[in-house]
Image (spheres, rainbow, N blue to C red):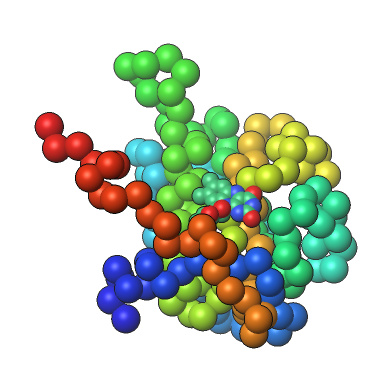
Amino acid sequence: MDFLELAKARYSVRKFSDREVEPEKLEKMLEAGNAAPTGKNNQPHRIYVLRSADAMKKLNELSPCVFGAPCAFIFTYNTDEEWKNPLEAGIHSGVEDVSIVATHVMLEAQELGIGTCWCNYFANSELEKAFGLPENERAVLFMPFGYPDEESQPSERHGLMKPIEETVRYI
Ligand SMILES: Cc1cc2nc3c(=O)[nH]c(=O)nc-3n(C[C@H](O)[C@H](O)[C@H](O)COP(=O)(O)O)c2cc1C
């Protein structure tokens, strides 16, 4: 499958099976994240891998978007390490850095047959507190992952893309 086919085949999985994800697949997903570019290569991101029943219970209490997944990642960034734009006060790269790392992980998962869902429906400060994150770390998203349930289907929103002419301007 070429990259465009892979990108189009990915969809947000919202029904997972409890089949265990092989450690070597998990490692490949993390390696793909590790290969992502970040602002000035500062790599301010942190990835928490939630695998224990306790951790998943805690996540389920924070959001309805875990969807029965056996595991999840939480993606955060360190506010001291993110690149800060010297030309524009207040513009920092942490959220961008985390986003590209998470995208690498998500697409590698797709390549490996592992389903994911990007989730930001949670109270960030509550999650940071519940998982005891350091004071200088901000949570951006969590991502349940695992093998899709055999009944898993894309939502009706999947693939409803605006025409490219609406979102791209040539100037
Ligand atoms: C920034 C962002 C936040 C999202 N947050 C959630 C979420 O909290 N819960 C959820 O079920 N899906 C969430 N999604 C998934 C989107 O709803 C989904 O990607 C979109 O509807 C397109 O569907 P598809 O991923 O199946 O192609 C999020 C996606 C992105 C990129």
